[in-house]
Length: 265
Image 1 (cartoon, rainbow, N blue to C red):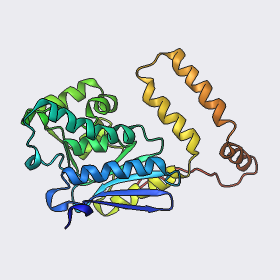
Image 2 (image 1 turned 45 degrees about the horizontal axis):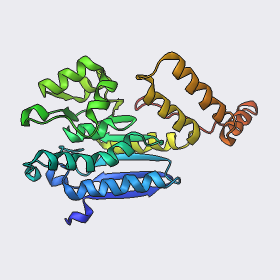
Image 3 (image 1 turned 90 degrees about the horizontal axis):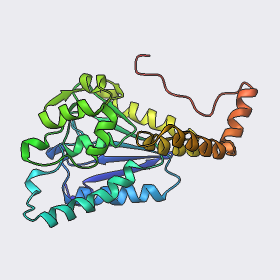
Image 4 (image 1 turned 135 degrees about the horizontal axis):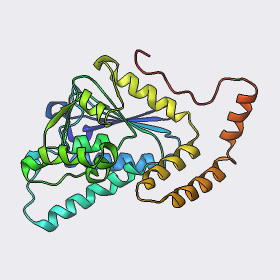
């Protein structure tokens, strides 16, 4: 396997699927794969034909985190520069104004867990395992986890996961709000793609405005959020998507957007 193929990018019907492709290393993040992710996220950001994104791992694991064998930073400024280079595309992905689904099988450790948390929804298999092991190697949670983890699971549970560095299974991850849905391994990628395609059919304007507003909600007050609602709704009312959705409702035609039922539902 060559390094230039450590990330597979496939775009079909408006859905971009990014597959971490180092299965023998449990898809651990090294330099080439980080560079490929940066390029892919930048390209997606600039391509309005992409309406949704799926993150997945090749083989039976999502991502084991950073490749510890490649961690040889010995100076603080070099370490900070390394993280700054990484955080450029992390911020772009966290703030992407389109839906992102992470399909997690096997391990999602460290930066792998952080990467999954950047998604709007995590779909996992029963054998998925999540861990923030940074304390075990004397490091700080990265790839956005200090922002996403408390927002997803709450501060108390974030402290538990970070300071204990304990592993949790898919069911506990679902119970604390990190995992959206658990599906059989053989259905994982099909279900993630199904969710992505469903959300790709939503109003891109309404989705983008809502996602951005939700990201600001925990740091804002009620008046600030009401103002965002007013501004966002004022824009959404004018879109062709809204007008067509209303027309279909009045004419009793199938809606533009329909959420796919849960597995087994």
